[in-house]
Length: 138
Image (cartoon, rainbow, N blue to C red; front, side, top):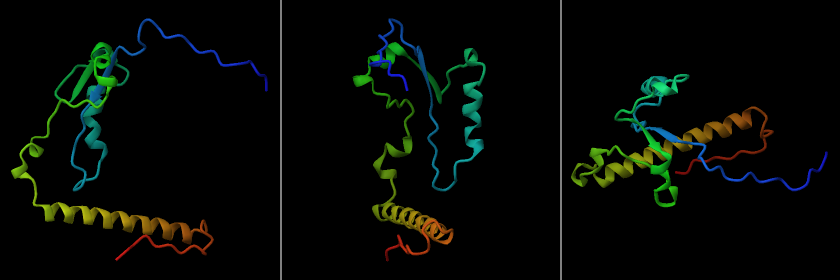
């Protein structure tokens, strides 16, 4: 190994490397339907791989200039321009016990998946059969 000394730091360019940041808003509810390739069809059509110069903005796909981004507080990239109308009115929200029930279902499903992973690890010899751990709690 040849030691070339301290790494040289490149000086900042007068011109930013990125002129535009394109963002696609793909907010969908995945609880009742898993993400599939068809959910990405519109994004791919908007993205135009290999034809970036043909991109156009629409409701879900927007470009933000360097100047717009640098003006944001701490250059925050948490960018939202579409609002989920179903979350704006608290009277439209499910009852608290329904929300809690959904959370419990999600947690139980996650625990089942973790237990299946542990069983696979133990059954495949990765845990050499000695480690019998259960992630389920009743």
